[in-house]
Image (tube, rainbow over all chains, first blue to last red; front, side, top):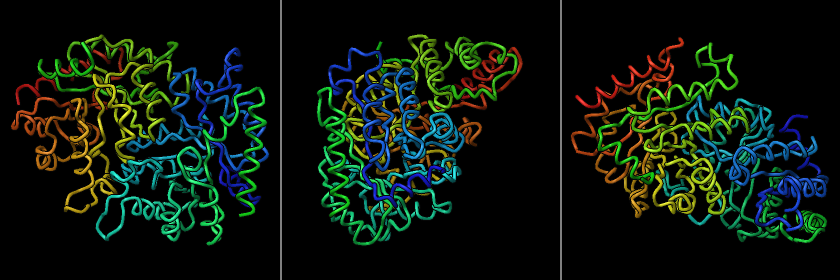
Length: 267
Length: 267
């Protein structure tokens, strides 16, 4: 089963919650700090508890890079802990000229074995092309992000009276020749999401912004169901993995994941 | 001497060539491959030969990340090889929401000890703010890049009849409260550079695109001299560090660096 098939299978099975492993040493349960690699232990427990009921894991590289090369070793070991049928997204937000982008693609897809990555669109097609050449992997292009300053550039009006982020979505559709493009669309404003559903067409949609950043599952899920767009991932990181700080943190967080899955199913 | 002072000192002394350590295992002289860490040995020889006569070194992270955590160890050791008076740019092109950007800033400034970084503007102010809070480091924002696809988004017209990249330069000037902002401006088209010099104001300008990508020193340097803008770095990577593949590669490349320095001085 290749990376693309892993995603599609999980969607068909009704899974849409993506769990963000933004593992921060200052936020993991204190009892783990006595162990040799608290971050890896934390991830291991979350992955073991969650693996049957998550659509995907998303790993934010910054949380590992902050610990230098040792953090990157933890990153690699974390990816290896995920069962083969669950896709793992490397949230790396890379973007560089062709020969450099090729190196980033090799690092993320060949070395770390991510099933998908996130990419900056700013430098245009040739900066994402080396990633798109991996036709069985998914490349999520940043469309509209969930942060306040998305207004600075993403929401600038360009000619044709549309926003820059809408042009990025349009271009991403053009680049989707191998059906391996996804798009990042911040889930903080359901009205905005609804207004742009037509543009998202065949793209797999990765939605950050639910939970700590203010969006809700109850608002976002119906927008996709109404138009039968089944290929979407709602990412939840901090508000899920740090739900509890006792020795039972993984079980408590797992109960919360099941509640989230239920909301997505029944709404 | 803090990072910002290191840059300014080199400019005052008349140095403007920035050497890109895009060290590729397939391009280093063959005789180095017998050594334990050919990339580090290559960098060591280039740094030793160049250190008195370069304005700065720029290290492209992709070339190290492609080798996983071991590559990152080489990256750290490479930064440590550079004498304290020569600034080192971490060409990382990062950009993420605030709490994540903070982690990237810690990684690049505190762990790897880079004097400067390159950043994607797409996500707006709050994605670069954690970097700007390091008031004695330099953050180079991507304005106009040197790749062909810069036309896809960077050269879109926005309202006010200017290009997106010009809006990015304008915003970067606004963010330059601590005088620690730089801008990346592709040097492939001197006419375009000339037309935009007014906008660059007090920003340190990092110019990729000279050498393998087609721009020339002879065209770019006068544009800065004419308006007495002395804070600029012309980056040269491949065409300089791979000038020769014998055991004397560093000396040959050094001779080339001196020629480049001369062009910049006398033109």
